[in-house]
Length: 152
Image 1 (spheres, helix red, strand yellow):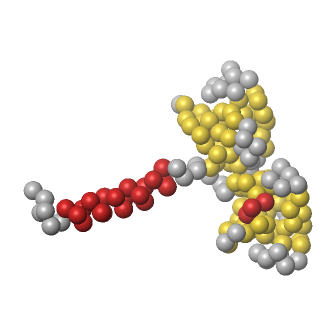
Image 2 (cartoon, one colour):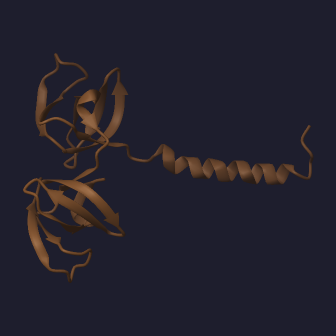
Image 3 (cartoon, rainbow, N blue to C red):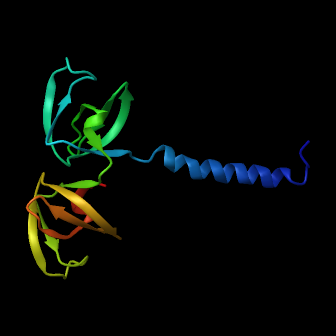
């Protein structure tokens, strides 16, 4: 039997645990393409039409699952299905602005060490506040403001 004096504390504790669990339920699950090229299909299976061909590292938001297939969305809100085994949990970003500067340090006053263009896939190396340290496929490493990117 529950002690009446402890009941309010138990109710408060339960509410706190529930409130902490809600954001995790809505947390965005992300994956990236693990192979050189992966087909994004219109449905969950190899018989469905290929909608897009995605390159290595391309970040995707997971919307659902059906068997060994995952329903995904990209930074332009295109949706489709990819085979789960062709994805990884390696974090990547994609440039969502026309052109971004890769900087030497996480500051808009830092020197520019390179540039990336809309749709370029960047390997995520580190996060610091509103900045992300990335590596471009050409090998250039630098910091980009997070608001100019999509991914994780």
